[in-house]
Structure formats: structure tokens, C-alpha cells
Length: 428
Image 1 (cartoon, rainbow, N blue to C red):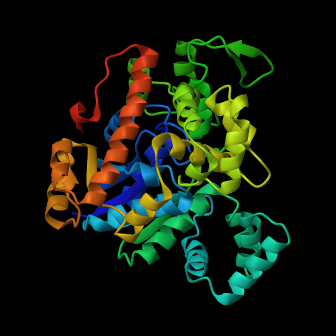
Image 2: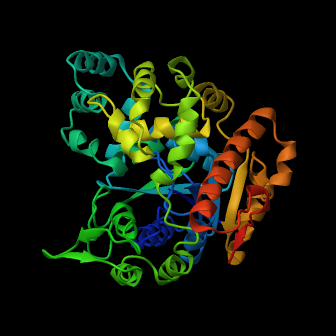
């Protein structure tokens, strides 16, 4: 059985994701797609707009063979950690032949050239990088200059500005660092740009769809095509999304609206504030993405905390991106510490493969994983007793993060709480 690995967030699932699955199967000749997906929190440092099992169900109905959860410490990490966690997980399964990712440029040889340079970091590259940083440039700008100089290819500057290119380069770096035999493929991203906030043809960005869902059944006004400001009902929104997401996803969006989603950063405001009230700068720097400067800024700004999103915006500086701040606050809230992540990475990255769901007609994937994987396949949390100490610690973080998310969802929408130990595997 030939398997292609896909690394995803599906936040939420849309036509571009459907195209990615189908095109990945076509160009690799794979029999099935195995997805590694972020759980209830995503790489930009926020909660996912809807729970992981709802997103899993969407993916399975749209062609994914099976979905595994990326541990929360990697799902909420920098592009480098995100890629290393996901690629190492796919590699450890022993059944993945290829990995296919979207990129803005779709030029695999050029992406590989840049990835090789960034893995090897020759002295010339390091010297130019240091020089540019001393001039006061940001790290991304300094890296662009160093890469263009060392490769002699001016196209690299633009390539390093686009988010999917950057993530693709990190996947290629991770394959090299892991010594993986998985073959990489890339396809050109279709439709709107990653950060686009407007619907665009048949292939709008997840950002645009999330923005539209933000107005679901609310009195908030927004502008679409034309000059008129329009108040949208949820049925209006579903109509707007009718050609943006697969039919089954639209049905699930309708069925679970205000039962399981939408979920936003500000729903976690009191939890975050409680965590911050119990901290001081020296304790905050233990968490991922928290520098001493940011820790001090958090503590001195705490009296101005109004809500999660507002506070994250208040902390933004010229040196700190909003995404970096979001990740730092999320890591504090979820208790994800630098020392723990370093231990995981130094000990093989992953200790289990946790199954979220699968298609019954692709159940052979699970059989193959059970035979060939160097990691145990977790289908029930009771099976975790056999994990090593580090694996149990990583899994506890995953469970706590998901239970916290579910608690917020059930409190917001007044539904029954079901902890991770009682959640079911999605089968279709």
C-alpha cells in the first residue's frame, strides 16, 4: 500500500484542502492519504475555530484515509518545531512513502536548495546573517539577504516572504535532519493568499472563512463585495460558503453551529489571566517562546488586561510579531515549557501516534502502522500506560489542552462535557 503524508490544520476545511488531498494522491500515485493534523490549537498560537474531531470528520468525508493528532507542543510551535514534530511522526510510522505540501512557488528544487543551505549553515551564511542582524534588521529580513547572497538567486528573497514556502522549506529541512527516506512533493497553492480576509472565487483562504464565521448569528456588520454594509444571518453565511467548502463540510457547519463552534481566543480570557496572575518574570521565561523581555512586559502590563486578544495586541512591539506573542501566551496557558520540549526533541521527537479517525475502507493503514511503526498507535488512552515517562508527560499535556478546550466549548454553548478519556474515534 502506497501512502502519502499530509500535514494540516484544516482550520476549517475548505475547497483548497480538498484540492490538496486529491492532487497529492494523483501526483504521488498513492493509494491513500495519511493526515497529521493539529489538535484543538493551531500554529499561529490560537485555539482552532472548531474542535479537532469535527475537523477530522470533515477531512475523512473529503478523502483522507486516516487522521493522527500532532502533539500540542509541536502544533503550537514555531514553523521549525511544527515541521520537525510532524515530519518525524510521519517518518516513525514506517509506512509513508511521500509527503506533499502546498507552496506559493511550487518549485521543489529551489525550495530544497534553500533548505539545504539553512540546514548546513556554512560560515559565509552565518557571517552575513550576523552582519545584517547587527545592522538592526529583523531575523527574517537578515535571513533573506544571507540566502540570496549565498545562493546567488534573487528569487529566494520573494520565496522567503510567503508563509507556505517558508513552511515547505521547514518540511524539507526536517526530512534532512531526520534522515528520512520520505520523498517530498509540492503543489502550487490555489486561489487567495494565506492571509486574505475576503472570499475569493472557489478557493478562499481559511482566514477569510474564519472571518465570515465570526459574524455567524451576530449583530456585527461587515463588508463584502459592493459598498453596502450588511448584517448577516447564519443562513446568509452558509449561502456565502456554499461554493467555498465541500458539501459535507457545509452540512457539518450547519449541524454543529453554536454546539461545538465557533471558538475564539477571547473565550479563554479568564483562564489566561488566572495563569498570569500566578506568575512572575523569572517563572514565565520557562515557557516556550517567552523571552525575558516579553516576560517583563507581560507582568508590567497585567493591570491593563481586558481580554485575551486585546492583551496580546498590547504586548506587540517592533521586535515581536503578533504570532510570536500569541504562541507565548498560549504556551503559558497550556503549561508548555522549554525544558520539556527540548527533552522530547532530544529523545526522538514523538513517543506515540494518536489516532483521531479513519475511513473504514482505509483500515489497512492502521494494520500497516501496527506492523511497521516504531511508535505505538494509540486508539484508546488506556493504552498509554505502556508509554515511557516522557511519552506519558507529552500525552498529559495533550489531554489537558483538549480538556481545557472542551470545557470552554461546553461552557459557552451549554452542552455536556466529555473528557478525552471518553471521546470516540471518528469512523466513517
